[in-house]
Length: 297
Image 1 (cartoon, rainbow, N blue to C red):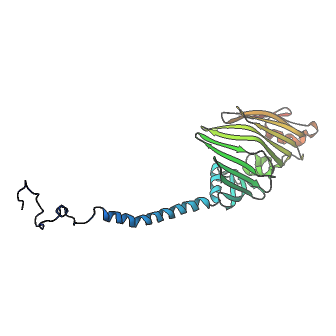
Image 2 (image 1 turned 90 degrees about the vertical axis):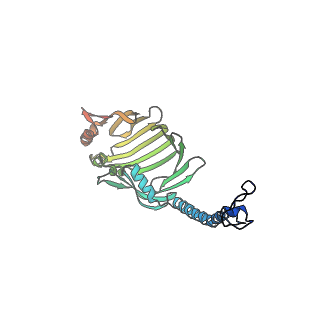
Image 3 (image 1 turned 60 degrees about the vertical axis):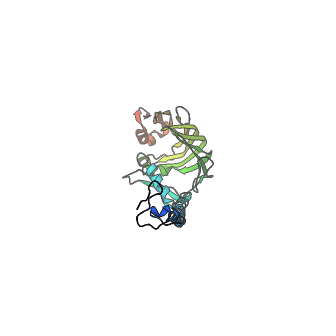
């Protein structure tokens, strides 16, 4: 009961005389608010850290030991099925595979590079460094610097030389499977840099592709000649075709405009080999007398 409300506070009904005000609120004297909650946190926190450590370990092991077949899937998707990395071994960071070229979805044409292509990928101070080495065709590895930018990506290729079998092109389908080229492709690069900026490709530096001792099943003349494709960066990127030697003479020039190649050239045959090259000239371009007019774009 309340006695003298003005003189002393009212106690909870049934409470013993002299009880502390805390009892009036329903908790025992001497108890500290929140002690049970703090104790529970201390008990569960080690388990949470352990779980976080396990999850972090799983993520790191997945990243460090990601299988090479992930690279195969990425390359296949990026090339629309025209470049396949078969029998992939190792990891994303250090692996190898056999390179197969195809004509894409539905194509029956394939060609596989002799030997294996090996790669290593390592983080750098800015971006990453990728090394490619094909034991069949490279005297030294290609070293590529991948440099991301806020609005794109830049790829720098080290100066390098390599030699590839021309028959590998047959795997790409039309028109290579019709021409069935044979010979050697010698590729060299000088200060080559590719940059993707806001969806546009910008190229600086130069590259040369020499086609040495080219022959085709469409002609009985073997070889027909040797040729050079010169690619020079700038605005726009330009392409030039010249004949190094041979009875089949080809020349032309072009440039990339709006991401599309526009090329004009012509092909002729030495008079003494006109008959042997006539079929091939008909396929190379539109005939204008002895010449075949080459036009792309």
